[in-house]
Length: 118
Image 1 (cartoon, helix red, strand yellow):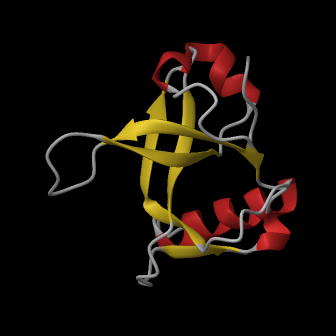
Image 2 (cartoon, helix red, strand yellow):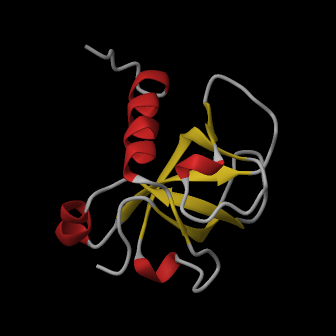
C-alpha cells in the first residue's frame, strides 16, 4: 500500500454536468484493510471553490501538514473509489491529520448518509 488514510492525492474526477474528467485533489478516507481487500482506495474530492453548501467541509490550515495558504474544502457527497494507477504522480504531497480525517468522516456520515451520531 503506497498511500494511507489522510493522504491527499490527485486523480482525474468527472464532476456532474461536466464533459471530460479533470484533475482534482482527493483525500483518502479508507484504511489500509480496504486497500488490501481489493486494491482500491476510497476518497473524497477537495476543491478550492468558496461556494458553501450543506455538503461543504472546510479544511483549515490546522487540519493539514503542509498548508499552501489557499482555501480548501471537501465536497462530502463526491466520494469515489480509485486504484493506484489513477493517481497523478507527484501532484500533491500533503496529508490531513488523523483527527481531521475522523472529523471529516463523521461529517460525511451525518450530512451525506443521514447517519445519526450517538
